[in-house]
Length: 446
Image 1: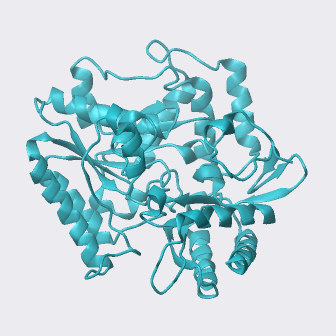
Image 2 (image 1 turned 90 degrees about the vertical axis):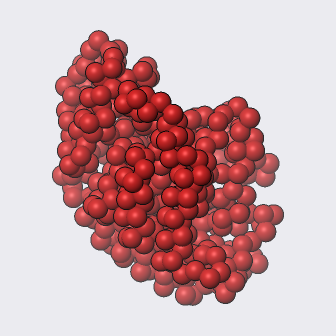
């Protein structure tokens, strides 16, 4: 039975599939109020990293709630907030010293952009205000984050009320322009970054923000290793801060705490995380920064930025419990192992279909690209809404996958295959069995 939810009225287009009411969840599964079970194949929106119904996180939540849930961050702190602000930089590794806690990914991106700008001003580089980003790319829904998001549809609508920032091409690994291969196109994209810095005026460019492994905008895109090293060198050459948006890819999702750790010679200056940091148990995000930036800003009078719920005790305790669960259960290692198994099985499925064009990703951040023709990589017409139809069929079979048609199909469409990091081998097999049946039904409808 369709649930007419007031929230859905704001974002569901005409003809959108019906919404069901969830009853409860446990592990990688959740159930609706009709008793139907769903395998959470995309961890919601790549959020539920440790699965549903974790009792240790629940206990930490209750314990902190019994103590205190909120204090104003400018005057008070608590043990959970202090411990979390110490743990996050340690997990981020050398070069990171401080964590600024917020309520989600968009807020974390905003914090990074503002910290970068204030640091430049403090250092006497007041002309630096332009933040380069990639197209396609996604960094959030608030106006600052949207300004660095590479999405023509959003720019057309919201551009007049924000300062749209310059974009450079993302290094696709599947839809590569004629005359390039994966490696040469990655080089081209890095070179375009340098050209754009020079075109804008190097003294005006503040930062370059990118997702080291793509999310909804590029479908788990990971570039060749040399791309990251080249980008790092270009940023260093012109004094441009490198910001990694790890809202999706962080918190162990790719098999390491940060996806950045896959490229240790190309570490960013600032990094933002969210989603998996609290695994959906509370809205949460963080910006992680080095002392060399933070100290200069603090010496100037402090960071001119903040939110009501920055570092609130209840969310801090929940996120701390989630991260400890990830570490104690070796979920990063499991994400790496299960990711290999999942991609192997998804590639085998691709070979048995006519509409899966590509399988890509790292760890348990993966995408399955949907095409009308495998040979030409042709995209289905918009009227088909292919990825959304695939997700609808999957849901009817008891599998949740997150569908995305990027920028009205300009850059392709896919479903994200990103189950919780707790997934086991039999559960990976069940995931692929359900997805196999999904594509059999989808292709029978064509």
